[in-house]
Image (tube, rainbow, N blue to C red; front, side, top):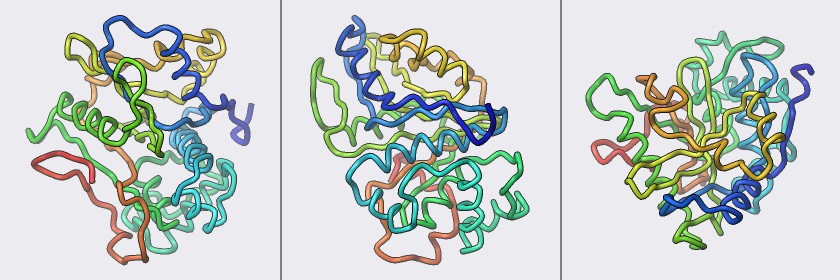
Amino acid sequence: MTIYNAMVIPKIGNAVLKAYKDSWPRDVIRMHICSSLDFHAQTMNWDCGYRNMQSMLSSYLSHDSGVRDQLFSGGIISIPTLKDLQKIIENAWKKGYDRIGGMQLEYSLFGTTKWIGATEVVAMLRSCKIRACVADFDFTGGICDLNTMIQVIWEYFSSRCKNKNINNSTWPKSYTIPLYLQHQGHSRLILGVEKWISGEIKLLILDPQMKRAIQFHQREGDEANILRQSISTHGLSSKSKYQIAYLSQQSLYKKEKENSKIIVDELRHPKLKFI
């Protein structure tokens, strides 16, 4: 397998929903999940950011929304290859988006094995006039901790997933995007959240690693368990800094603004809310 080809599992969100409907976890009292997307698995140790971006774009392009229309207008009508994504990000830098991030990567991605992160995702989307934002969670400064971040993520999904279904839980009738979760050395997608009878919130996290794709193939019907992660598992509590890329509720720019080219933390303090 080369960097040009990834293992793709279509409509992974639909499989997760089916898993819930077939076997609802006894102690889960509520669940919220994003709109469906395809899972693009990682093929190299450095391409997690690109694969997550492909998975996100599969969601954007498969739902009738202003975001999809804006991508179409920008020439993105199908999932870009890894090298195409490198070119698109380089073009965003040329237009002036995230000059600081571009400088750190020497304004060059095409044909390289350089890692990308949340700010590159946001720069690419903003260059398409999509109002993407980044939220910084730094647990070393005393403003917030991991539990605070988990609560902010819960509020994101619970406020945007409004279509009620079984067990007082929701999956979106309108379009709700996943969250791009970045920490040092790796990135993943947050597809949804659960609240358990104990009060614990668990995240449904899609890790692009190939072993996760193999698990989905081998354990059909168990998708929710594969995605489910508590705060104490899978390294969530071992990191002190995270970035989350997301779309603002007002997801499009009516016109290009020069200050939109500068990417800064847009988490609203002290309430700690996504805009």
